Image 1 (spheres, helix red, strand yellow):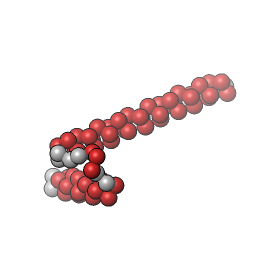
Image 2 (cartoon, rainbow, N blue to C red):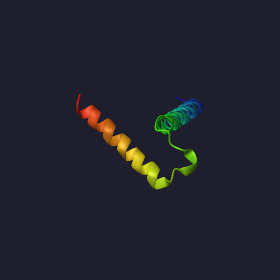
Image 3 (spheres, rainbow, N blue to C red):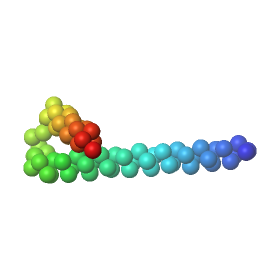
Image 4 (cartoon, one colour):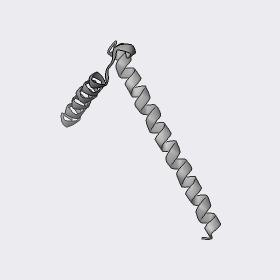
Length: 69
């Protein structure tokens, strides 16, 4: 493979990695929004410690559900 081809492949790989990263961020944001909406929480009053606590509780619930399968 010539250097030019390698550079093209590297550019494609970087673009694909960025696309994956963007999609993960979109999913995380959508998941967070759905949890907040479903819980009738107010965006304006959520603090960082509350967000972390909610995340831990959701994770524990999901892990327990997975273990019970």
